[in-house]
Amino acid sequence: MDMNSIPMVVRGCRLHPTQDVLLMPEGTLELNGSSRDVLARVDGNRDVTAIVQELVQEYEGALEAEIRTDVLALLQDLKQRGVLRERI
Amino acid sequence: MSTTPSALNSTPRPLSLIAELTHRCPLHCLYCSNPIEMRKAADELTTEDWERVFREAAALGVLQLSLTGGEPLVRKDLAQLIASGRKAGLYVNMITSAVGLTEERLAELVEAGLEHLQLSFQDIDEASANYIAGTKAHAIKLALAPVIRKFQLAFTVNLVVHRMNLDRLEQFIAMAEELGPDRLEIAHVQYYGWALKNRSLLMPTEKQVHRSLEIVAKAKERLRGTIQLESVFPDYYGSFPKACVGGWGRQMMLIDPVGNALPCHAAAVIPNLEFDNVRAHELGWIWRESSAFQRFRGDAWMPGTCLECPRKEIDFGGCRCQAFLLTGDAKAIDPVCRYSPSHGLLESLRTAGAQPLPIWRNESNREPPGSAGGYLPT
Image 1 (cartoon, one colour):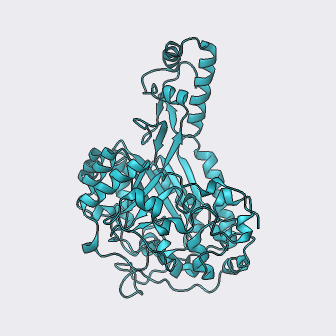
Image 2 (cartoon, rainbow over the protein chains, first blue to last red):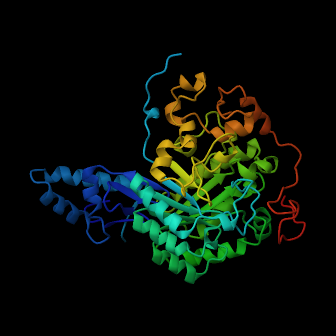
Image 3 (cartoon, rainbow over the protein chains, first blue to last red):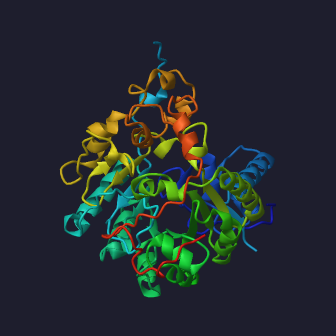
């Protein structure tokens, strides 16, 4: 996962419309507030750069470098868990 | 005896609702986990009953709905039930044998909102698979896999393993991979319901279990990033019990075909448990107040050994149905636990005895219905 990657959730995985959980076959993954904000932007069209830029706008005063690190770490973790993949 | 206040004794919200839509099923698997006494079609809940149950479940905090049976496809209102589950805000899973499923029907179910389909396989070759399933289903399942893959739907292949097929586990996994699932479950048979009747036939040998654990670990590594592999450990070979259904009355509710609310699949085997029915009570009331859900919730029921054991926060005291089925006492320590005085019983069951004959889930209890005639797997 790098800044040019285009992440997407795998088939059968979706964000709960109102609650901070990611739903998947026979399971759920609880999300904290900011990971929900990241995942809400994972649509198979935006690349990581675009996601980070939007979050920089959203979180006024936060350092872009920190957001970038956090977003990449989260996406990498979710990829490891098998709920995200990179669009080829 | 000292007891420390534990988070175990709060009433958490349920996450998962298992809807056993029917006990009718075209399969008669030797390892079927459904109760021995099955519910008749005429007594099944109506569409409206289920729709209300789904809404009440979502209001209670449930996120996952699993439609199962029996075979859910025999319900003519299945698409409507799926749509109602989705409308209520639930994630909709279906566990099916695929017998009776066509591309048109599946399109209808996906259109209604089905998100995940699980299909189980009995063995690698047709004769043996059909023998275990008690019906000619293997070819139907194989033919449907590519049809399922045409849809935007998560697909799990479930391999049910036991003594009769474990020696072919590597080929079995290879067969599953060919079907292109998103997830692969390798589940050792659990001994409840009909499976318990056939336990001596299905119980793997120690050698098979150890070999299977290695094969599963290797497959998990190899398939990482392509197929998510989950495995269910054969708990008769364990030293500590499983956290059965995530703890009694903690995460899961099961509604049987006639509307009785159970804390797990097998709970009806436990004597003197009274199940409340969704026709008479709101689901939230059942979750909080039903005596069956309260019976083994928390740690008040636990024997001293469990009460003082730090593992009670991990396994919640193991499986109550298994404790009852193996010791006759539902409050006993789960015999899977090394600290159970009955643990030796499991050790003795691990030794394979003479190969017994299968007991079939049909009227005659002798011949597999529609079987290949006298075929016995090696």
